[in-house]
Image (cartoon, rainbow, N blue to C red):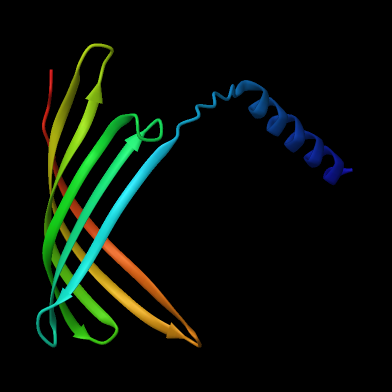
Length: 136
C-alpha cells in the first residue's frame, strides 16, 4: 500500500510539473568553419593558432569571427600546457544596422592524452578570461 501511495504521489507531482512547462522551439541553421593549427617549433614547444567563422541562416548573416594565437609546452608525451590570447568580433544585428562587439580572451589550457588500446582519449581543461565590450 505504501508503494502505491508513493508511486501515485510521485506521478501526480511529475505530471503537474510537466503540465506547467510550455516549450518554445526555435530552429536555427548555422555554418561554422574552423582551422586549428599546431606548429612544432622544438622538441617541447609548439605554436598554436585558431581561426573560426560562424554564420547564421546558413551563410546569410554574420554570427562571429574568432582568432587565437599562443604557445604550448609538452611536459611529456601525454601532457601539454598552453597559454594563448584571442579576439572575437561578435555580430549584433538589428533590422537596420549590424554592429560588431569586441571581445578579448586569455586562454590557459591543460591537455591530457591517454592511449586506450587502438584509440586515444584526449581530455582538456580550459580556463578563459573574457573582456567584452559593452555597447549601449
